[in-house]
Every structure is written in C-alpha cells, then in structure tokens.
Image (tube, rainbow, N blue to C red; front, side, top):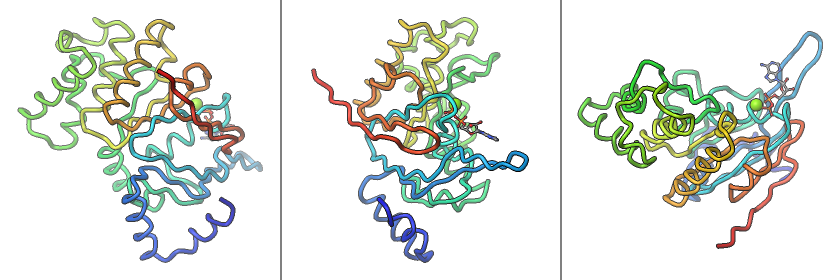
Length: 256
Ligand code: ADP
Ligand code: MG
C-alpha cells in the first residue's frame, strides 16, 4: 500500500479517532501503518522492524514466520504493547496504541492481549488454578468470580482434573495448557503466542497446535510467532518476515 502510510501520518488527532472507529467497525483488531523499531548500537542503527503494514481481523489465525533475527520478537512486542515503535502507527482494537504512555499501554495490554510463551512463565509455587487466576487479580475481579472463571478456563483446555497441581507436578504440555488458560481467562481480543511449542517434544507440540485450532474454531483470534514452517502451516494465514519487512502474506487453504 504505497502512499497510505504517509497519508495516515498526516491525519489530525480527530481523523485518527475516526480511523480507529472505522477499523473497529470493520473488525480489524490489529492495524499497523509503516511501523518501525530501530536500535542504535554504537555508531550503527539497526532496524529490527522496518516499515511494516499489517492488518489482522477478528477471528483470524495468523502465523508470523521468519528466520532468527528477522524481527519476529520485536514485532510481537510491538503488537503485544510490550514495547513502543520508533516510528509509525499501531491501532489495537481501534485504539492508537503507538501514541500511548506506559501506564495506558499496560492497561490496554492486560485487557486486550493474552500471552503464551515458549517457556510457559508460570509461578512455580502456585497451583494451576492460582496461576490462571492471577490476571483476574490484576484486573480487580472478586475472589468468587475469579475462581469460577479460572475453573472455566482450565476446563476449556481439558485440565479440570489438574487444577490443584503445581507446575512441577505437570508435564510440559499440561504446563503450556495452564499458560493458555491463563492467557484466555480475561477474554482478550488476541491470543499472542511466541514459539509456543519450542520447548515441547513433537507429539506434545502437535497436541498444543490442535488446541489452538479448536480455540480458533471457537472464535478466538490467534497470532502465532514461529521460525518453523510446519508449525506456521497450522495457521490459516502466514505472514513471512525477513530483515524486519513483510516479505509475503500467504493464505493457507484448509481442506477437510
Ligand atoms: P527474531 O525474534 O526474529 O529472532 P528479533 O526481533 O529478536 O528477531 O531481532 C531482530 C533484530 O533486531 C536482530 O538483528 C537483533 O539483533 C536486533 N535487536 C533486537 N532487540 C534489540 C535490542 N534491544 N537492541 C539492539 N538490537 C536489537
Ligand atoms: Mg525471537
């Protein structure tokens, strides 16, 4: 879309609000315009993300794939509101996240994004149930409702029988399912997963990918970051990135 980025940049504050509304109406949860993230290293400038325009709609299941060092994690951190761009615009669910200060960014992140990481990132001393409850504590949900919702989320990943187990009493695949339940418990707009099968054996990896497929069919929007083509092919669309740029945007046809 050459030209679009420049035009977007020149919009007034009011026009940006309108743009956000329009994106929301169209069900576009993620929209970046000429997004950049650059780092200065000594006398060099590294462009980890260099001019990315992507659009992801509610209900999509998208993989962001590229070799090591291509900018995947940097892009995921921008999309997940863990970081802010050097340049460009990012609308998350109609709100201009690229212009937000840290506290506002933290709020929108907690509300809109569920994260799943390669190494699960669970609290070792806490039960599965308590791990899943945590985001609800931050969101100020009452104790009674927290437990109800955490139970529901664990049920949705078939772990209702393991709620009182601590992470070291669970297998790798079960730990990742706890992490997925935790990511979903706040009903986020997007499930963002960075190499979610990277620490699992291949059989367990396939089970986790089957779970993502089901969660997608139940209406969740999923963005999966991976360097592995066979993992990316589970998604319904693959955005290939290289040297911080979108190289190719590919629809994956699914035959049943
Ligand atoms: P990927 O996740 O695809 O492996 P990254 O997003 O981690 O790629 O990194 C993309 C490029 O940006 C790499 O060249 C990396 O060295 C560089 N980079 C990432 N983070 C930083 C940083 N904090 N400071 C300097 N360079 C960085
Ligand atoms: Mg990475």
